[in-house]
Length: 360
Ligand code: ADP
Image (cartoon, rainbow, N blue to C red; front, side, top):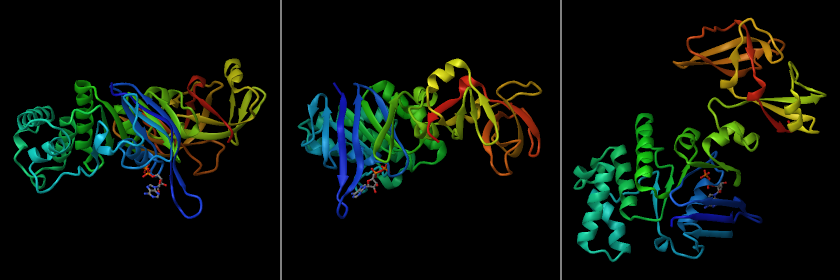
């Protein structure tokens, strides 16, 4: 069973007196066959986490269990995992076949015939059967990445670890390989921990996402849960493109009061807020709609400052009518709805779409 558990896993790199806490008391439980994407900004501890699971980095505190067994002190080659790197890490002097067979020849007692069969099967799965006699230099970036994946598959491990495997590919290939990886996951059902800084990859590929910030785990949940019910303001701002708008507000009885607008709350939302008075109101750009001439508690007069056409959608920079020039927030508006810079428009921010966070 390819379960993978991280229990209070911590990594402190020595640095002068104190040390840098790169990964801080992280708990993650992956079920067998799960695809978990570890995501977060550069330097948040993603690679270090993955490298500890791989055994390439020692663990300062906590425990990692693979298939229920503690592996803290198990050498990388004796952990039943295969790692795929951003740089492919292929041996340039070996053929594709040689690259794929290498790990097996080194670390298993399979016969030559069994190795041949496994390599052929993995090459078939990755669609690279006709490339087996080529050297890496004679392959495109996408083909090299397929070989790197093929080499991982051939080992038939309990767990795949992938560190930004698509980031060297151009946008089109990247999206093709995203689909390909999802197909592989459906077919092979191998437990996979996948590291990326790209929230689109996280949203589209993960059964669940683990979001890290400054070494600390912020939330582990399905992509939709992270989007609809972000655990905190960091997650809210990280997931979603364009990013959520944030407004500092103060609660005055039943109304949230910002510098340039008031937002009345219904009784049920007020219950959720409790006694907190200083809050941040979060609004996703895609939850803001054009209200036409209708007016209500949650409609607001705004001025369009900039329109960025994106094809089927426009990204529109608006400011509240009473706000100073340049103090904008973002709305996404269907491409067929004509709005232009300088227009005065009324928008609606429905109460059921807003997010409230403690503190400003
Ligand atoms: P990410 O993969 O999210 O970009 P990393 O795991 O590479 O982040 O790094 C997390 C933190 O640990 C960063 O502050 C980084 O500078 C630090 N770090 C990573 N590797 C080392 C190392 N070998 N020695 C000292 N500090 C390191």
